[in-house]
Length: 405
Image (cartoon, rainbow, N blue to C red; front, side, top):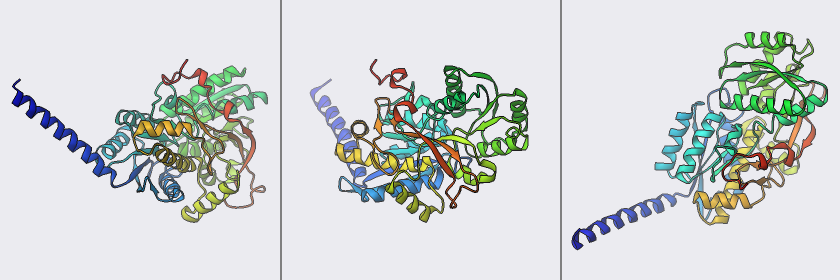
């Protein structure tokens, strides 16, 4: 190559690199952008949706509306519970709209897809409402975080509690995609580890129109415990079907491991009373929590779900990470986020592990009776605290390649 041609090629390369740098710098002048990818219209819209977008905005407001001297913007979009749509939204946001972090992801298939894309793009992703344990296991990411709960945290404590009560035979009614299959899998392993027996199960599609056949099979199993390994409208309709087919009256214990306070409101205390589940959020944790709940209800006319306040907490902690890193580079911010304890209206003393799992106390919850309730959102009593070090899968058992063995 001639010297003149070489110089021309180098100049062109430098010009391209400079243009890319200037483009990035220009995009950053718009400030820090946070994208809430959620379910705005489907089965999980009540427990996430517009409430998650509001929770993100409330976190930004609490932080002061700016970070690194620049404004913070919250975007939101409906993934329609489809992984390809979620990935398309995230890719467009990352590539053309300067979004720095994405959060929420009810529906684990969408969460897994976008977490991998964010890793490729060096962007932070935080899953609040999705539950698949794979997010911090084989599919873990250096820029990915799992915030609120997962299939392990909502399976093992319930399995242990009920088996200790002598309820040793278990049956599963499971939504047939990543979340439901992971939840059933964690329950099965937990039941066996605590001395129980798995006697069977049946699957159903997301947004199942009818649960008749599943409940007939569950009743015929004579299992002491019937697990509804689903969420949102599927869980609500499953509970109604269980009552209609006489499972509870017949002496079987129906549990709803992944339940949100909006689900209980939809069911009503007359139907839901006595049901047990694991909750990530105690609405009465402290005054800061009570104040957040009050402000959220004033704006949304509903109490925040654990997924929604998880979004608030995740956004707030991300902004602290940006401030500490003095940058929006995904890996740099993620490293700072891991080094800072999580303290806010959601949790006290939360810690982020190497695999991206934010560990914190969980709660064994039971739905109140109508007589016990003192207000429209006074629906749950917290039986006991499940300590952070036992609520989540031990790091020693992780298959995450980021964890040193």
